[in-house]
Image (cartoon, rainbow, N blue to C red; front, side, top):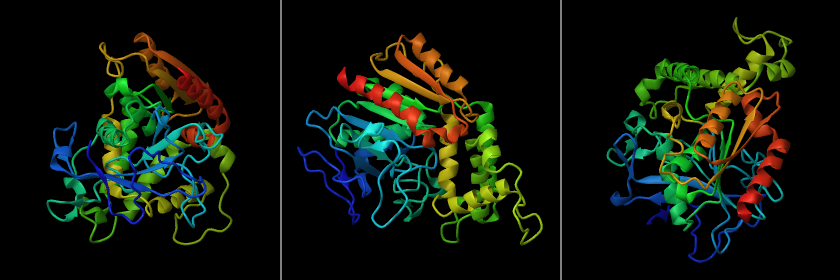
Length: 392
């Protein structure tokens, strides 16, 4: 497998034969992996090709001499490669810092943990905001359709570059869980175990409906310009509303009641119909913060990839697939975006295929966000599951 690190200032070369070790979880850096030769172009599920491709990624812990302790972490829709640790001079840790590190669920004293930004994203990996080599301008809507399977194929190139023949585990929540399941479907021989959290084997009509409204809110913004807004400024209003809609689905009725109830802001300011209730102000704040870090076109492409995802029936474990991978399926009682019933559908499918699967529904009032904040219960399950997988 060819490939190279780009000439980004913080790119670090992996020297063949030497493990890549992160000396301190207090400070991390993002690295960039390129596969740029025409022969290395990604053959996408749509039939199109994509290249050159850059993947942004981070690593934590040390890859052992046998390269048998690698754990791939897959991020959710708006996540990125920065899963743990801190960037120099910044106070906010990676999005799953409470789960990755020494002594944590994904113990970096034992495991080599990787996380890469998906293709189609906007946090360092090739996506709609990247320059199209054919035009020298951002792709915009000329970026090809991408799927969860395409995301996994790009990750597979990165795993090949590290010389890892078989991952100890692929894990993730929400869209990350979909990627973990897709790894088992696409490359069953290369995965020893899978941890899929708060996820589904396919989007239901309700889930597709929410994503359609999200996309329409972006495209209804007059500054979207059919995706060609990079020289003019992003469609902030449409993207902010899209995120507000999405954020409602991340919470639960109980968590909203506990956090906001029907509390009103003390003083009504600004134009009429500014948010009057605390929950409205919170959603507006979240939307306005989101536009500072995410590309609107990337949101369109990734939500569509979610809707296309379908590993129902025999698609997850095919009749000729390898069945020696172990699965841990975790769901949360108050998650109504990806409810426990969808996790149980995955479990039934795996049991039908005579696969070793363990499942657990954790009690939580946090809704879908529980996979990011419910540390204790997940840590116990994941730590024991990984230990037993590593010892096999």
